[in-house]
Image 1: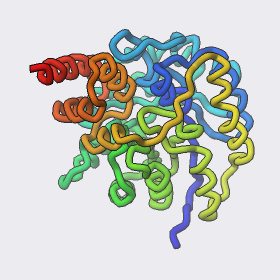
Image 2 (image 1 turned 30 degrees about the vertical axis):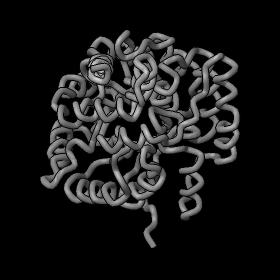
Image 3 (image 1 turned 90 degrees about the horizontal axis):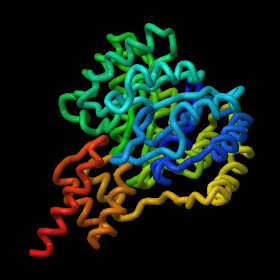
Image 4 (image 1 turned 135 degrees about the horizontal axis):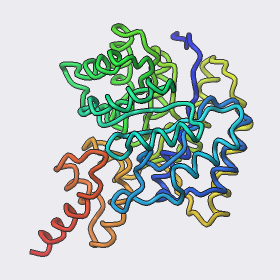
Length: 346
């Protein structure tokens, strides 16, 4: 029986990826309360910010309740034991956004973009290195480079040659199945001496199994969120994932009882702030979304415009899937669904 041989770093993305689930409306009280609780659990890292990361708040993508600076300063003031991280996508964020995040006391800078465009991370990675802050590379929408040629290895090599020694494979579309994850982790570990992370989405109901497989075959970092709270069908559910880790014999430092308590309290924290809690689970639209390899964060936009144009959401995802949109192209959803509505009228 396989065993997990290395320490697993638990990275909590509830306050970043979870922002997708509530139209980026996580506020000051939620950040304060959640960070205060997670700080006492032994969770290693917590990521805070707009769902699409640093600098992404906009009319087309969705406006954050708080500015990046305010959100990060609130988290930093509370966190004493758990490290603070941010997600940064070049194009949404600029170098001066990174500079402000450094001033806010961010510990880890995760620089990522759609895997096909990974070269656009160059300037931000170099900036982080110059400023002597910890920088990770993130291959978003990793399924786009998962092919017979193993194109993902070229992308890893690009980051590695830049001096990045920690890289996260992000299954943004919830596309991968366990055998895919095993294949990816093993192939990367054979060629590169790096610390490897995995970020799962639950569109096919495989986020837990994918994350466990990643750990068994050499990943050392796993992104999780409380109750799976995140974009689309949600992320790897922290409370379940940690329980399964324990069940297969892994002894970590996270206080599981405290995680269970947070899982019970979190919906109430949101409801108290009049933020509608969205319980993640995979509906047909999420399954369809993953099947087409679409970004999980599209779900709220598709819901809104499907309702506005009185379209079936599955038909909407089919239309968007045919255009092969990627994260950052949310503004095209309106046009696609508007045109779909016009075609249905004729």
